[in-house]
Image 1 (cartoon, rainbow, N blue to C red):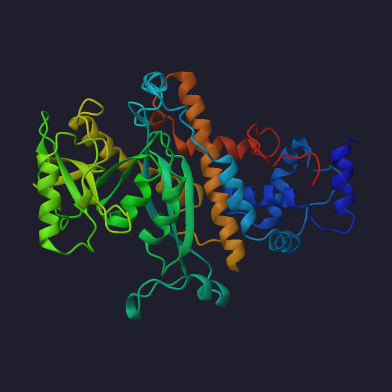
Image 2 (image 1 turned 45 degrees about the vertical axis):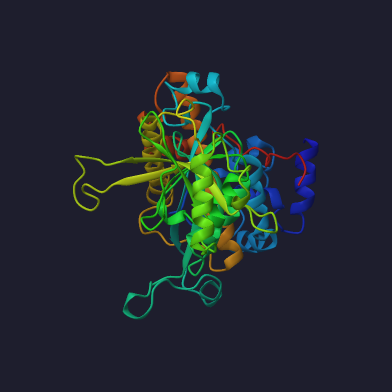
Amino acid sequence: MTRSRCAGCEKRSDGKLPAHVTAYLTLALALFPDDDYEEVAARVTGSLDRFGVWDAGWTVPTASAITQARKRLGRAVFAELFERTCGPVAGSAGPAAAAAALGTARGSFLRSWRLLAIDGFEVDAPDTPANVAEFGYSGSGEKQSSFPKVRVVALAECGTHAFVAAEIGSSADGEKTLAARLYPRLRGDELLTADRGFYSWPAWQAAQATGAALLWRAPTNLDLPVIKVLPDGTYLSVVIKPEVRYAGRRERLLAAARASTDLSNLDHIPDAFNRQGEQIARLVRVIEYDIPDRTGDGHHELIALTTTILDPADARADELAAAYHQRWEQETSHDQLKTHLRGPGQVLRSRLPDLVHQEIWAYLITHHAISALIAQASTAADLDPDRISFTQTLRLIRRTATGTAAIPPSGLDRKTP
């Protein structure tokens, strides 16, 4: 018997599951959402034995034992596990990587930037007093939801559909509130796309401060005065902090920007800063277009995108418009997780808020592992990841998870508990 098995057996001597085994079992619960705790444990003991964290002499734990072990684990472990293991999937950003990835991860890069989207979705939790107190219902009166709603806002790679960062909150937490916690995690080699509902001055400031490039749809009420028309038909504009209400100052700032010979930024314009040295204006580039064959809502609607990529030589207008519409790929990510992995209309298992957090993180980690596997397979076969069925991949993983699965979650396969 190996040292890891002995250590594990010592932990099992009091009937308690070690933390790392509990983590594996929680991930397995996300892989088999239709099965009860004991059936899921029985399914995966073969793989756990091969990973070196299970002993064939152990009995399958009861549902109560698994629940108690999950309670001991708490809510923070899986958030940290996701943070450590669920990084970018589509390779390294940069011109060479983007060119190499063009055939196998279409939509993953725009030139030297990794293409990300931000969006949110809701999950139903069991209707228990603890979950209601933590997460609340959405709506009110006759329109109140039947179950407590958990709100999730996430960053996802557009090309691979892999979630790379997420925040979990209650139904009362707005998407903007949760998104604000994600912006500091952006990287300088990333281009973040976002719908107009995410725009605000503080959000734009926080996201741009990371060095990441931004490509967000402008809300209809955002004033975008023309500062300079560029050769490709896009134009430079200035967005100003809403608290700056004095019209004279705004006009002086715009006049100074129009007269400037250096429009790489506004750092040389005094009116772009307040007395405390805080920046109150940002230079942006605006791409305006419509979609002629669009029907229904938005027919002939003018779409205005704002971006921090100011030079058309760095990204053409048509490239940026196409990149923005890759944002819709995140809807595929949501569908894969909510409909195919978790099951349509499925309510979470967890009756306590800590376990709800665990369960959602387990789904996000499991989805990321599947997305990574699809990306690897698509690269090997020189295919777009969209050409490989998520559903068929999931079925294959479920069939092999009983003893031949080959994708243990990185960071969990410890030799000692």
